Amino acid sequence: MFYQNLKFPRVKDRPFFYTNFVATVDGKTQVLKNTADYWPIGSKKDHDVLMQLRANADCLIHGSKLALEFGNITLDSLMGRELKTLRKKLKKAEQLPYYVITNHPTKLTTLLSEAVIVNTDLRSLVKDLHTKGYKNVLVEGGPTLLGSFLELNLIDQIFLTIAPKIFGSEKDSTLTLVEGHLFSKENIKNLKLLSVKQVEDEIYLRYEVKK
Image (cartoon, rainbow, N blue to C red):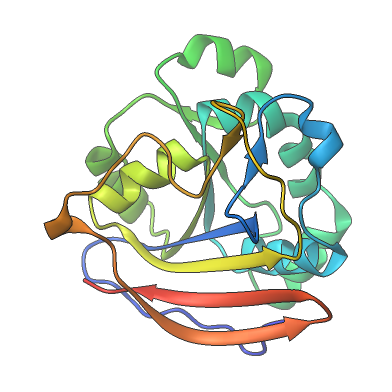
């Protein structure tokens, strides 16, 4: 595996939350129009890292926009042999629970019948996940949901792949790591670099979010 003996710290009274993104050198995580022309951003190795991080999770969380666009692809991946094999090696349940946070639960329940659709505030969700015994929770976004988790100081580590590409941008045409949230100067998120790995021209960064 890419990260040998990957372990996460325990957090008191809640799960440990981590996130995984791939971005271009100019900081773009998605092009909104003609998305397929710009996807995937990362390489096969980046996909392998994604699978490892999912394999280590007790629960996967997406926001509604991400789920609408990639939910069925995500479910197919979660049910695939590759992930189940990785989870079995880690002595985890083969099926990774897939949660979607949305203000429109009826629509997503119809589209993604095998996902857990929740319409609740994040603090209530955190309590529920803790009650269920989930220790490591992967929040894959999108950028608005990630911003909400960061605003409440819930994200503990960030795994970020830097792809050797520059997309450029036009008004309202791309997304970055966090959207819809501008942190105050007192609440800027400062990170501690835990590791750097290079594979060909890609850089894999692992950060701890300082509390």
